[in-house]
Amino acid sequence: MSVLSPLIVQPLVIAATLAGGDTSINLFWNFVYSYGAAVAAAVIFMPLVAIFEGIFNIADDFRLSELCNLSNPLLKRLASEAPGTFNHSLVVGNLAEACASAIGENPNMARCAAYYHDIGKLKAPLYFSENQSSYNPHDELIPEVSVSMITSHTLFGEILARQNRLPSEIVAICRQHHGTAPVGYFYRKALSLKEDGELAVNKYTYAGPKPQTKIAAIIMIADTIEAAMRAYTPDTREEYVNRINRLVDEKIELRQFDECPITMGDIAVIKNTIIEVLPSIHHRRVDYDKRKRERGNA
Image (spheres, rainbow, N blue to C red):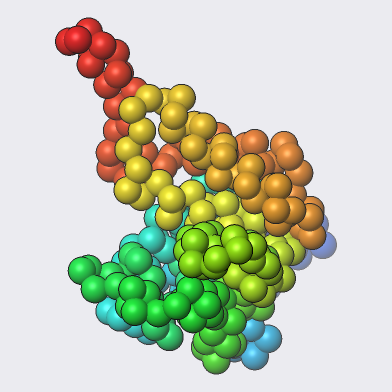
C-alpha cells in the first residue's frame, strides 16, 4: 500500500474537525495523527496477512500469486525432474484461467490448481509420455502394473501437496482431476492380451473421487483436452471442434461431473473457450482450408 493512500481519508478528518467547530491547532494534529494511524495500520496489516495465511493455509489472491511464481521450489522441481509435465501444466493453467473467467469462477485459483495438479508425477516422471524421449518403461510391464503406476500419481499428488502445505482446494484437485475415469490405453492393451475378450474395467480406473467443484471440473476438462490435442493437427475446424466435443462427451457419459455443481451451460462455455484459446497457446494455427487446397490441386 502506498504511503499516499491514507491521504484519501484526510479530507473527512478535516471536515469532521471543522464540523465540531474546532479551528485551532487541533486541526493540524488530527490530520497528522490520522495519517500516522493509517500508515501504521497498513504496515502492520501486511505482515499479519502473511502470518495468518501461513497459520490457516488461506488461499487468497496473495497466496495464489505467490504459489504461481515459477521460482516456487515445488514448481522448480517439477520443471527439472518432469519438464514435459511442467510444460503441460502451464498450458492447462492458461486454459483453466480462461475457462474460470468465462463461467464466473476464480481464475487465480484455477491457474494455481492447474500448475500443481500433476505434481504426483514426480514420483516416477518417466512413466508419463510427456516426459519420455525414446525409452518407454511401459514396454517392459504388463498392463496392470502400468495402470497402477499411472493412476497412483493422483494419490501421491495429494500427499505431496499436503507435505508442501498447499491450500486444501489445490490438494483436493490433485486427487480429483481424473475422477474415476478408466485409463483407456492400458485397458485396451490388457483386453487384447486376454483370450476370452472380457475384462472388468474397474481395475483400470482412477480411484477418484470425482470432481467436487467447478474448478476441479475445469481442470479435468482442460487436462484431458490439452493432453489429447498436443500432437493432433486437424485438417478442418469441424474436425478440431468435433474432437474436443468427443473428449468432453466421454467424461459426461462416464458421469464424471455428477458430484460437482457444474451445469451443461457451464460445460458448453468451457468447451467454446478452449476451442478459441488452445490454438494460440500451442502457437500453431489450425489449417482449416487444407482440404480445400488439396481438392483444388487434385
